[in-house]
Amino acid sequence: MTTIEAPTTQARVADRWPMLQEAPTGPLTRLTAAAAATLFRAATKRLGISVSEDGSPADIVLHRPEELYARLSRHGLIGLGEAYLTGAWDAPELGETLTVLCRDLDGLLPRWAQRLRGVYERRRGEKDLNTPENAREHIGHHYDLSNDFFALFLDPTMSYSAGLFSSLPSTEDLALAQHRKIDRILDEAGVGAGSRLLEIGTGWGELALRAAARGAQVTSVTLSVEQAELARRRIGAAGLGHRVDVELCDYRAVEGTYDAVVSVEMIEAVGERFWPVYFAKIDEVLAPGGTAVIQAITMPHGRMLATRNTETWITKYIFPGGLLPSTEAITDVVDAHTRLRVRSRLSFGAHYAETLRRWDIALREHADEVRALGFDETFLRMWHFYLEYTRAGFAADYIDVQQVTFTRD
Image 1 (cartoon, rainbow, N blue to C red):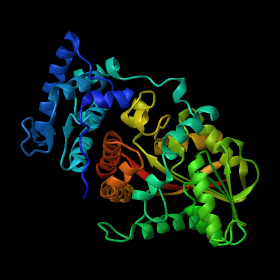
Image 2 (image 1 turned 120 degrees about the vertical axis):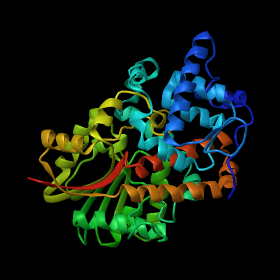
Image 3 (image 1 turned 90 degrees about the vertical axis):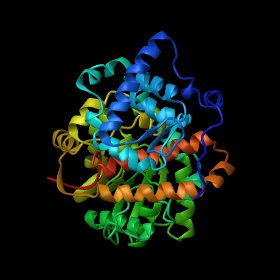
Image 4 (image 1 turned 60 degrees about the horizontal axis):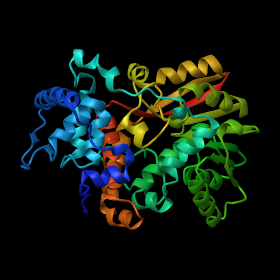
């Protein structure tokens, strides 16, 4: 497997990645960094995570401990991720180490330190809101990186969401797990010959393809130019262009009436302020007797309330404007703003952990091809950290993924 090297120098990283400017310095930073070092050592020792500062084998190997502690002291968990991006530390088994941390995320800091979060946590501003103008930019930031890049680590279905395996652990082909996930959504929504189906969030077209193969007439909307282009090509190559219309369109602008509405891992990019609008649109376009199914990554309600207004490493580097809902939030919104009612839920977070594990392995195996596309070592480290950080969340049951089926009173 091709390794992902640490960037050559911190200065070079800061030059190409302005968000990774030089680590904070100064008298105050030295004081807070010393406190961060004490808390870091105490937490890792309590959790049984070995730490090395001399290059000897350990769960966490610190190359520039002063930088790590400085970033931790000023930016908390964002600083932990940023220190990984700059190469200040490494972990031979990153996902496993992050899983141990994630299982105790609420207890990593003593209560007195948790009360100081307001000192370093950044509040989210207007640019983080997924208004129609901001939403296109936010979606483009992630999904318009390069179709060739995503093809390097996704399975042939180009599905960028959790697969549903027949059982775990599994050696099953990921494409089969993706088709099982899609087929369950279409079955729950009652999609068959003659169905009018709306898909909010096209991805790269696999769900639309499978729905059209059933004889459905599909309208699929997306804000990603790259995804729309490839989805149209794939649909045309399958000879199903007469059954699928892929539109570059915000979900808020959708019109018409549909027998079924499906949306796979799209709600995470909607934002709390617009959840009522999102579900109201589904309610508005759903025909009498219709069914809606969404697949959503969820988090505990208390954690959602605690973090909904603060910037995280994920929102800063991967999904600007994103927020994971809780199951309670989804239920409260649909009850208050729509005629929709939850009929059933399927929870399969462990399946997402396995999906992410496979994506990360594939990405590292194709690291040279990623470099050939023009991406640098910091980008590779960012994606390795993102995939393993997210996998840890699912492996630790800190976050979940659910298929939620709605009918309308």
